[in-house]
Amino acid sequence: MIGSNLFSAAEHTQPMSEINTTPLVDVMLVLLVIFIITAPLLTHAVKIDLPQASSQPLPEKPEVISLAIDAAGETYWNDAPLLQGELKQKLQQAADHKPQPELQIRADKETRYQVLAEVMADAQNSGITKLGFLSEPKSN
Image (cartoon, rainbow, N blue to C red; front, side, top):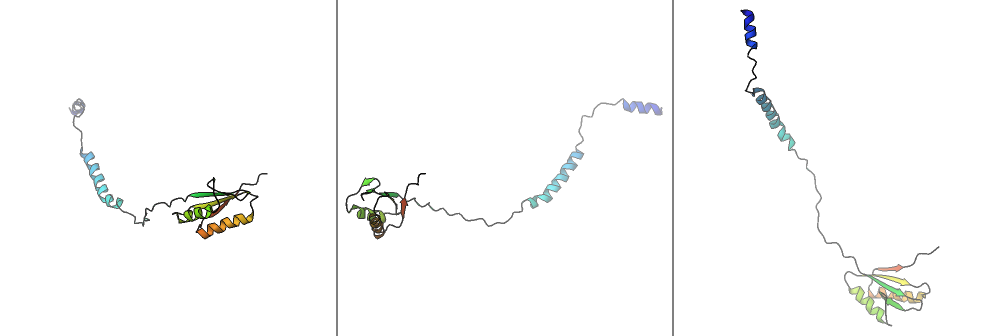
């Protein structure tokens, strides 16, 4: 009889139709407690001083005026020939313009220095503050 009881328990080998959820609930409760404890630590912020941005318009690039002087001493304002005495008037108008344009002088290598000096003096007297010289690179 004792041996027959062992074999009778083995006859009930049908799969269980219910899932035991107790271990799953235990694990979920442990995870919930861990997240409740660690969540306030994740919201820790580092205080930093950020730079303040200011939006200012970019300064306008000034106009460039090309003043050419040929070997004969004739002057050209942006490649347009100037009459005698018209240079001072054009320089005064350019000096009054805001922002003040940059005057770039291109002189022929045969131009007399006196003509170039008079042009620079006229530019200074009219109030031009930005003056540059253009030249060609030396060819080898």
